[in-house]
Image (cartoon, rainbow, N blue to C red; front, side):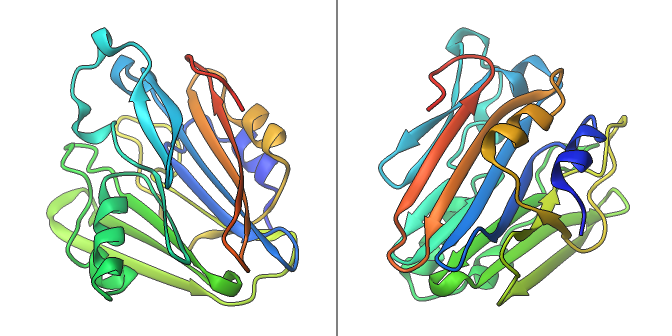
Length: 230
């Protein structure tokens, strides 16, 4: 199992990342973080909504293109907790309201239209009891006409462990897309995760302890560029 803190400390730019794991017998722990290298990417904070969180511009005057930076990373729908790095959160929620599945929703989506990066779309969903799924939608070798869709299902991860997936492997120009299966990682405390993210590139972190019996969330937000951390 990979130590999440050591992994993040040694990776200058994994981009956006999702961790889902089992905190204890009753609770799942979920992390979602965003990083940024451009002014537009860094000009963001997380804020709470009635069913999750959204990204907002820290300084609206500096917002250039909202299409890929303003979205709802987290939405709770009945007994499904959805977390993603883009507006596919809404696609998944909309499919669930129609009785369709996480996979059905993501089969209608692809990577982000931000060539030459073609940033992968990463997504997760947690169900009652703690069963969860992760997905990554990416281009094949940077070819925008070559679509890869990967799905991973987890039933009983051990207490104290989770699975990590991110948009990129590491820094680069362009940064290489995440490759391989989600990484089995430890589940450190929220303050430790925030401190481990690269100080030059981190933007925001969402942390949640989710009671999988009633889907009550104990949440915290960390914002580098404004807003209240709570």
